[in-house]
Length: 484
Figure 1 (tube, one colour):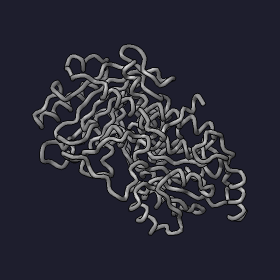
Figure 2 (cartoon, rainbow, N blue to C red; figure 1 turned 180 degrees about the horizontal axis):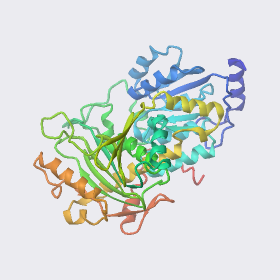
Figure 3 (spheres, rainbow, N blue to C red; figure 1 turned 90 degrees about the vertical axis):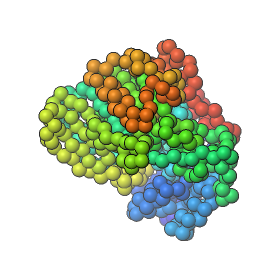
Figure 4 (cartoon, one colour; figure 1 turned 45 degrees about the vertical axis):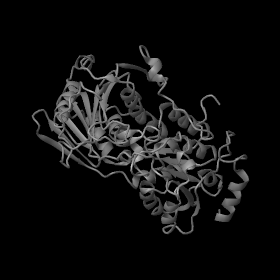
């Protein structure tokens, strides 16, 4: 089929009514030998990394560029001068010649952009975390199934061949015996984002209404416009939704082999301390996940080990990774490598991998060509479940009251992983003359989760459930696909 014939075919079979119509579009079938035209929703740093990967693939062309920041478009246009460009993603989605989109926007745009794209008949590669709130993630999963679209999540370590070797080692060969508990870490220094006395002026090159999309129009008091939206609840998910989703996804993949979608109970707390800045999300965060089988904790800190240092505090295992504690030793995993140790701490076996970059994007294109979402290494539902752990962890923090040592002991902790994490956090905070039982540290009640329905149940569930869905700003409202 020639390119011109293909375009004519797509034009004749496209959905009527535009990109955001709720009517199911006729599928635009990508044949195995045809070129796949990819549009980018966002032209920021991560999007440009994706552009490098996709542009090297045979039969893939980058033909659409979109960003509410015109200066970003202008920069990327120098790399892809033949690509069309827009500041409004709806105009990109109206272009019938674009078959798939890559979404690397701020977190608050991920689900709505993905849903609109799938309604417009596009396949989707969307960056992690899938959702900014748990409810909208459910709608994105429902959209992928309803419109029969290929939708992959950017947890690229899932495409690292090393992961299959590790799962065989732990689960098929049982080389370390039964897994008893798991510890997840994200210790990485991030500096203050500043705190202005007056709102940050919006740069003239940015269409702020389009940048905000579903988020509320609130003044910004940070120093920089881009990137530091991560630490604002209106647009970001903090470090838990930034790096936490990667390491928790590794834990779900390796330790549970995705058998646990969401935990049965969650218990956690933290604070934003040291930096008197405009950030809202915690830079110290600790959570216990009761899965009904293997207990999991995560420790997170964006502070240096001590004031004035550049390095993160020391912790068991990798600073960004996980530990599976087993009957016969432990396994430590992180992006690109892993190591197994016996009970005496002697190295048994090392694993070498890669980040999964390149392979992950190629896996998405393969699924698009074959029209088979089952071959995705990170299908949207997998991404939704891993993001869910982060969404619930953030709710636990936001719902918390003042930390108390007695309350912190309320959870059953037969492996001692929770007590160990809290002791480490206490020592970490002592370096800053802080104590966990002083303001502003919070600790949630033990929250029960109905994993099948993705809601909280039991005591105090009403307040917790109110945080499962955000308030959307018209006309950028995530549709209820489940009930449509």
